[in-house]
Structures are given as structure tokens and as C-alpha cells.
Image 1 (tube, rainbow, N blue to C red):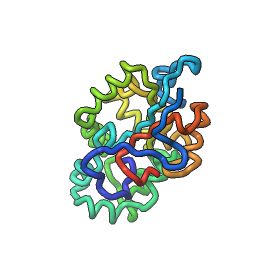
Image 2: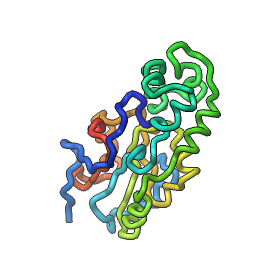
Image 3: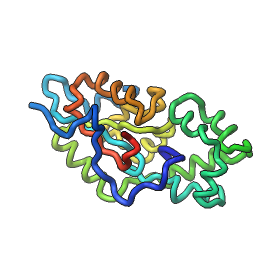
Image 4: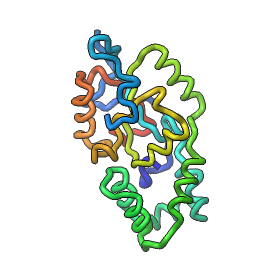
Length: 209
């Protein structure tokens, strides 16, 4: 549910690089635990790895579970939902209560807690990804989430404990910006205090850049 207006995701995760800011060529906070995966600058291992979350690390329940929750097809859900409510929620502009009031164009009531429970049940690691994260962590790579997602990232963390591998440093709800806004990318490199060429961004969608 990282972006309710996008097309269904591609079948496999791909490695993507922001063409102007992030390069694959390496050079020699409002996070849940921002120091967990961030070594000191003096001993910092490069490149720094930035991960999208939904359909890159975690299965996105929106495509498989949420339409059934509302007893709709995916197409019907996209047609009747409010065009900007979820994006505003991702940006931290509105809270849960406001989302509940405007999720649908016609402002019909729905069970918000039931939706959250549906999402929680649907969150799971994509096959093979947790082992990859373990391997990267064992090799001392610094890793951060860089994702368009609302405060419900905490539900993902509560279930999957992703912060044992990477830090939830760059969520759209924290910064009020969403990919592919260039200012969000600039905020990342400013926060990390590295050259853009020292970052690799992993995403499942070209829409991120």
C-alpha cells in the first residue's frame, strides 16, 4: 500500500538507481533505532544501501488482501477511493482519523481497525529477502529504509522487526515528502553526510525516480 494509485507491481524486485543523485559506483532519524545500523563516520563502510519497503522487502497487502476486505475488486477500490487521501496520509499531512473520514470519495464509513488488522496479517518478508538482509548486515553494510509510507510502518516493524537489519530513517511520513520528489533524495544525502555516489537505492518500481 505504499502508493494506492500505482499499477500492480512487477513480478520481481529490481535494483534501481536514481539517475542524478544515486550512483552504483562506490567510493574508497526519526528512526526506530537510528544508531542500530549506522557505524561511525570514521569506520563507515560504503556504499550505503537504501531500501524501498513495500514489494521490495515486505509483501504489500493492498493488492492481495485489501480489495477482499472491502468486498471489491482492485479496480473497483481504486475507482472509489479518494484520489489524494492515502498520499496525504503517507506525507503525514493527515492522521488516521482524517484518513478514515475521507478514504472513499463518498466518505462512506468503514472499519479502520479492521483494515489495519488486515494489513498486519498481510505483511510478510518477500521470499529470500530476510536472508539477504542478514547477509548484508553480517558484512557490515549500513542500511536504511527509504520509502513512501505512513505511520503504519510501525505496524510492519512490530510484526517483522525490520530494524534489526536496517533503520527506518527515511519514511515519507517523517519528512512530508515522497519519492520521486528530488528534495526527498537531497534530504537523504544531507542527513547521511555522504556524496550521492556513495549510495545505492534498491526499489521495485521505476516510479521512484
